[in-house]
Length: 351
Image (cartoon, rainbow, N blue to C red; front, side):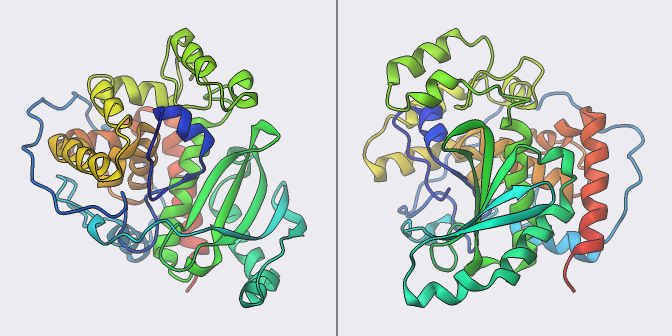
C-alpha cells in the first residue's frame, strides 16, 4: 500500500489490503516534504552468518540482476533505494473482474460495472489469463493453496501494482489483485509478485491462524486490543502468530527493540506529521532496512527482505538489513523454495 496510516497499527493493516511497496514508479510512503537526515542507529548487527555451502540454483543473472536493479539501487548498506518524495496521492481503485481460483486455473469471472474507457481492459481475458499464468508458473501450487480469488483492477498508471487480502467471507482464504495498467514491465512485476507471495507465506493460516472474532468484528477495537494482550507472540493483524512462524522469528530478531517506538508513530493523526515521523524513524534505523518502505510495518519488512532473498545474491551480513536476507537461509524449505522460484523465473520470464 502506498500509505499505511494507522489508527491502531496492526488492526488497520488487518482491515486493509496488503498493497505493497513494490509499486511502480518510485513512491513508497506517499507525498511528504523534504526531511532532515537523522544519524543511523549504532547497534551491532545480530550475529547471523551465511550458510557455509550455498545451494546451487538455476541461474539467469541477466534477468535477476535487472529485477533487483529495478527495485533497489543494489546498495545493501542502505543508501536510500527509492525516491519517495515524488509519490502521487492515493488513486481510486476500480475493480474490473474477479475470478475464482481452482488449483492452477482461474474461472467464473465476475464483471463489475465500469466506464466505457475501461471496457477494453475488462474484456481482455487473454491478458488476465496471462498474468495469472505467470504467477502460477512462478509459485509452486502447494504454497498458494490459500488463494481463492484473483482480481483485475486499476488505479491508473504508476500506483499500486498488486495486493493481497483476506477474503471478505473467510479469513482462512486470501485473494490477490493486479493492476492491469502497470504490468508491462516484468522486472517490476516479478519482484512485486514475489513480495505479495511473501505475505501469503508469512501471514497465511499455517503461520498466523486467523482470529475469527477479530475478523467478524472489525470495528471492535477493545476486542482487538484484548486479542493482542492474549497473544504470547507477535500479532501482525490477522491473528496471533505461531511461536515457530517466520514472522514471529523475524519480529523477535529485528523488531522487538524498536516496535514500541514505531507503533507510537501510527497514532499521529496529522498526515504531514505522521510521514515526517516515519521518515525520521527510517533514517534513525537506516542500517536495518533494505528499502524505505520496509519501515512501514514488520509485515512489509519481511516481504521486502524475502524479495531480495529470492532475487539478490547472498550477502555477507555486515548490516542488519543484509541479515534480514540471510534470515531466510535458516530454513531449508525456503532455500529449496528459492531454488524453485528462481528456476521458474528463468524459464517463464517473457522475452
